[in-house]
Image 1 (cartoon, rainbow, N blue to C red):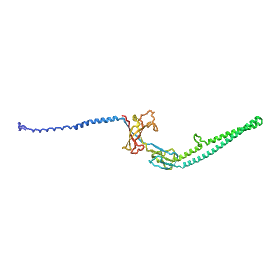
Image 2: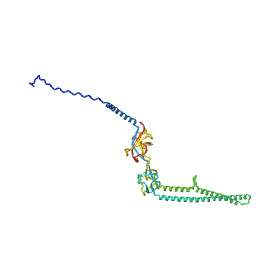
Image 3: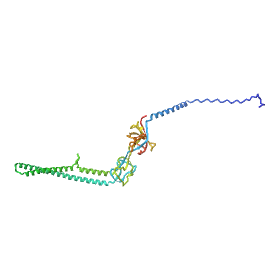
Image 4: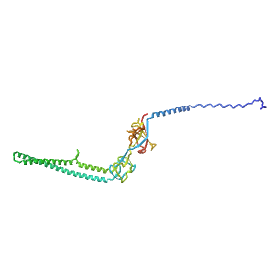
Length: 361
C-alpha cells in the first residue's frame, strides 16, 4: 500500500434509501364492537352462572339410593291339601278372579256330605224333642188336674173331721195326695221347661233351634273349605315364584305358594339423607331417572315421608349406647308417586335416581 496515492479518495457507494412504510389500514367499527362485546360477555356469563348456582343451591335434593317398588301379595291357600292342577305359569299376567291352582277337593266334599248328614240328624232330634215338649205339657196339665182333685178331697176330709165323721188317717191320706200332686206338677214343669230349652234358639230374634244352628254353621264351614280348594287371584297382577307349585305336592294352609305382583300403583322408594329433609314437603315435584333406561325420565310427586329411618325398621336396630359410638347420617325412606304411565316396564327393584324440587334457595 506504499505506492498508493495518499491523495486518492475512495468513494464508497451510498446505500439505497429505505422504502417508506405503508400507511396502517383504518380499524373497522364492527371489530371494535365485537371485541367490546366479547370482553363484556365473559364476565356477564360468569355472573349469570354464578347467580344461577347461588339461587338454586339447596333447592334440589337428590339421591341415587332409590328403587322401584310394587305392591306384592303372597298367595297362600286357606286349606291344606294336595295340588292337583296348576293353571298359571311364571310371569303370566292375570286378572282378578283368575284360577291360579287347585287343591284336591275330595276330602272336603266328604266333609260337606258329613255336615249335611249331621244337619239332617239335628233336625230329626229337634223334632223328637219338640214332641217331648208336647208330652211334657200334657203331663203338666194332668198333674194340675190331680192337684185340683187332691185339694178338693182334702177340703172334704177336713170338713168331715171337724164334725167327727171321718178319721185322722183319711185326713192324713188326703193331705199326702195334695203334696204328691204338687210334686208331680213341679216335676212336670221342670220337664216342660227342659223340653222348651232343647228346641229353643238361645238367641234373641231367632226362631231356629240352637242344635240346628250349630249344624248349619258346620255345614257352611265345610262348604267354604270346599270352595277354597280353588285358589283365585285377588286382583290384577303378574304371577311370580311359581316354582313351589308342583302337581302332587302337599301345600299347607297359611304358607305362601306364589307371589302376585300388582301391576298398578308402581312407586319409587328414595332413601334421602336426614340432612336433606329440611325443606322437603309432601306434594313437591320430583324427577326420576333409571339405571336400566338411561334415556327415560319420569316425573312424580312426594307422596309421603317415612315415619322412621331405615335403621329403625331393620331386623336388628342399631344400639348406640356404647362408648365407641360414631354418629352416622341416617337415611329416611320417601315415597315418590309416579305421574302418568311409563313407556318402559318398571320392574320391581330397579335402581333409580331421584331429584326433588324443594322450592327453597
